[in-house]
Image (cartoon, rainbow, N blue to C red; front, side, top):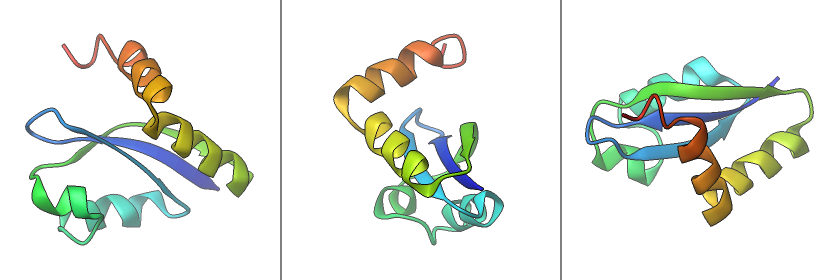
Length: 83
């Protein structure tokens, strides 16, 4: 399985990522072993994820969610959560 996930920091910053081992990757972010963005901010928590069988589908979805239209879509989908 391949996962596209969204983390939220204590300052309400969103981070979109991709991994084949979601639990390990979340722990890495929480322990400041993740990407550059997650090392800077504190208190990341998983707020959303999607699972894919095909790696190409997951990578395509991650790329979409990181782009302008994808960010708008994500904020619309999570608007009740982000209040």
